[in-house]
Length: 234
Image (cartoon, rainbow, N blue to C red; front, side, top):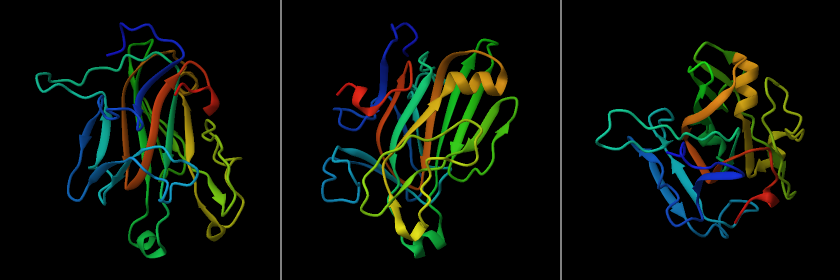
C-alpha cells in the first residue's frame, strides 16, 4: 500500500479528526460489537482530549477488532501496508468501568503488529493488558501493555512500553481507587523490538490489528523516531 511511496517523518493510518478515519481499515464486529465516531467529547469522560474519537464496545474481545489495511473482495490475501518507518504510536483511552462491570468482565485491550524482517520472515508482535510476561517464539513475540492511570484531578500524560521490562516506571504509585483512566500515547519501537527479539532487521510493517472491550482511539501513526505530541502535524 505504501511500499512505492517516499516515507519520512510521519505516516498516519488513523486520525479520528480526519474526514474518513477508518478508510484504510476493515471492521470485524460480531455478537454485540459496536463501533462509532464520537465527534464531540467535551461533555464525556475523555479527560484532557476534546478531539473526535473512535469508540469500540463489545463483550467478545477476540471476535471484534479492526485491522489495517483493508482487504479487497477480489483478493484472497490481505495486502501489506509496506510501511518502513520504525516506530508505531497509538493514542488510546479506556473509560472507567464500575466494580460490577469489572467483576463480570475485565476491560482489556491488545494490539498485534505483523512485520517482515530481512530474513524474509513474517513476525508478529502482540502487546496486551492481559499479558503479564514477555514471551518470544519463532513467529510471535508477546509482551504486557500497562496503561497509565492518573491520580484523580491531576492532569498529565506519560509514555510507556519499555522493552522487556515488567515494572513500568511510569505507572502511578497511587492506589487504584484513587486513580482514574487517562489518555495514553503508546509507543512501540518495532525496529528495536525486531532486533532484540530475533536479531534481524525490520523491513516493513504488513498489518496492524486492534482488539478491545471498550476503548476510545484518537490516532494511529508511524514515525521515523520517537517524537512528542507537539511535533505531530495537525
